[in-house]
Image 1 (spheres, rainbow, N blue to C red):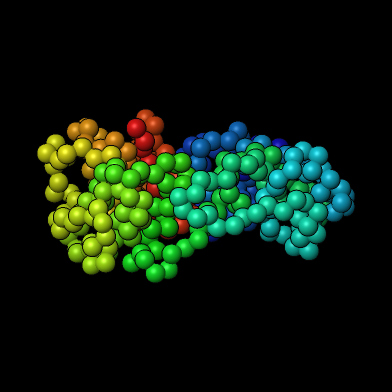
Image 2 (cartoon, rainbow, N blue to C red):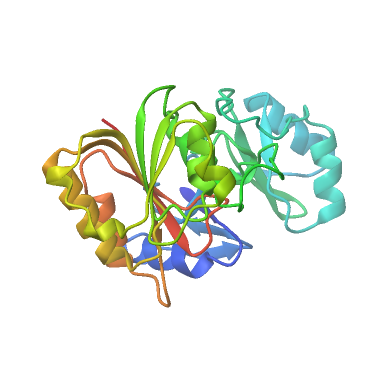
Amino acid sequence: MIRSAYLAAEGFEGDLGEELRRAGVRVEAWHGRLALSPDAPVTAAWALDVWTDPREIAVPSVKAGADALRAIQRNWAHYPLLHHRRSALLAERLPPVKARPLVFPEAAPSGHLGAWTLLAPDRMLASPTKTSPFVNGEVRFAEDREGPPSRAYLKLWEALTRIGRHPQPGETCLDLGASPGGWTWALARLGARVTAVDKAPLDPAIAAMPGVSCRQESAFGLDPRQEVQVDWLFSDIICYPARLLGLVQKWMEAGAARNFVCTLKFQGDTDHGTAAAFAAIPGAQVFHGFHNKHELTFALLA
């Protein structure tokens, strides 16, 4: 019996599998990027989506499969993998799920959404509930291809969308490891006051944005006990996660930041131990976003 299923981002099945192993969750089989487990669902940082109530359903015909899903609820996301023609015909019989790009800071979809996939021509796996409101956990945005100096802003947009909060006009933000300025650009666009910190210079166009100030120094050289409290601390610093953990703990202990959004960047092997230490911070959220690479996002809200 399959009691939970975990969808990894492409190329990160190994990280998800190791995280589940460390959590004592058995994986009996993989269906593409979907890890199938006989154990109850748990929080998994490396899963884009977790199917929390999967059940196997007989599919004697395309019509019967669609009718079975519609009898449970209206909206379903399709994870296509095998039996593409039959899958497509079944999906055509279901109400369409609009997966249009979000216009940030538009809120995440609030409608109820399940997920399904064909395991065999005559058998599907369907979960009426799942953790992500997005189709297969894939958060897509209407991109800005002119303003930001890099595409790093997309993972910040995703992080803020997923946590359901973002800086308000006039709130203060500290952007550590800011160069060339993708995150600073996104925060300044929200009307926040941003202090960008990096030993490398900020893109001149970003540095000239209203509300942006620059400090060309190392983020690790700052003493949070001597800094004015900020509403938000952001970090996209390239460093080992254990070093970032120490930095975050210093700012937390000093009470110098109210909210945190940071990227844990893994160099070489994934440091699952440090990721678990971040997740163990009371109130923390740790997740692998659709726009993350070999990294996790850590968020802590006041």
